[in-house]
Length: 467
Image (cartoon, rainbow, N blue to C red; front, side):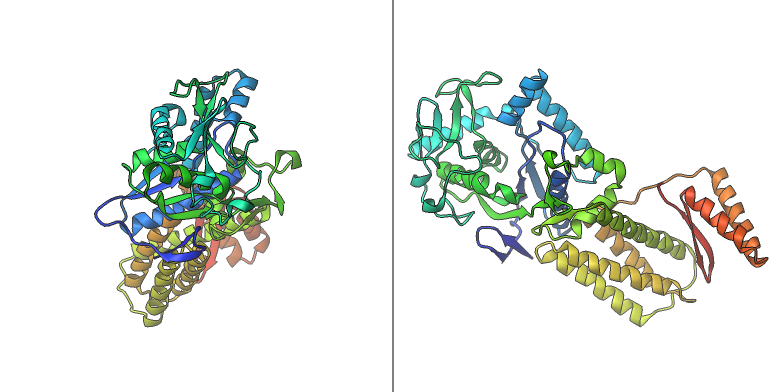
């Protein structure tokens, strides 16, 4: 299979590690506030990537850090009076619950910075022993000019690197681009170290924790949002390789930016959407399908219209599942249909080919809906190829699992089902008597209750939809 590797800017052949697990590290939250739609975009993307790898037989080990030692956490702690570790735990717990609702599979481990300070200190020591870091009165800093490969991920050259995001001015540093491995002092949460009381810099946590949970082996995939490429991921490489001397990761993967109605999401613009608010208005399946209609590397523009469109597509998917279940429940002999078999097998194969090509979910979803249309058409025939319909049903379950789309079950009491059937019979009687006003009224009122009627040559079918 092919994966786009950020440092080379091209798709490369990805081979599974033989006889060992496949280690994936995805940069996690800095939980100082509610998770938002941008977080959802990134974690849905990497969840789908993980699911496809699992379906291909990989023994995936997923690491996702929790940054509970960071200035944003500390500032919110001062505002609220809640201790930083407790504050981070609250927001992380809320986020994980929402991610569960989105059918995002849990990581194998969620290491916290506050619980891995010894590993961080050990890596800083190794970096210093290798002559790549120095101590000042304010902290310990990585000397980027001494790490010759600095810039290989972002493509920047040292002379081009200027002060920017997360580059903190400090007169004690030898170079403005040098970054903190350890910060001395602090008043909210501090730890003892060989360089005095203080706390880790932002970047070092991922290098140290990845090294711990892979047993010192290079990661197979490291992922995160595109805005982390520089300086965060660039600095991770410098730290990890500066300490160990071996490559940090085989493949780097990054998700594209998210905008809201064409503008950058911002609280000041009033277009900031929390994940909790999003899921209060839209189903998890519609949210996932909306994101997956765009390639993980492409930008995504959120709009209510787009997500409502995704909701209609989700209904079509699960309506087909229901129709397949009904068709396969009959004991009618299979009537082979060569054209349906060939076309449906082609769409199934194309779905998997798209996923093998850098997780091309837009292409895969296109083939999924081609398959759905073909199958609906076949289901209208008098004689059905139930053998191939069973194959389609099984493959559909496989595809939906990879995409993380799970059927939402809506229970209906037996008495209510009987009442719905009675109303459908009354509607049929009204139609036969050409009382179309009554017929349409029954259909409309049932629709208001979430009962959708579908007329066909084979009679009236109905399904329950969430209101």
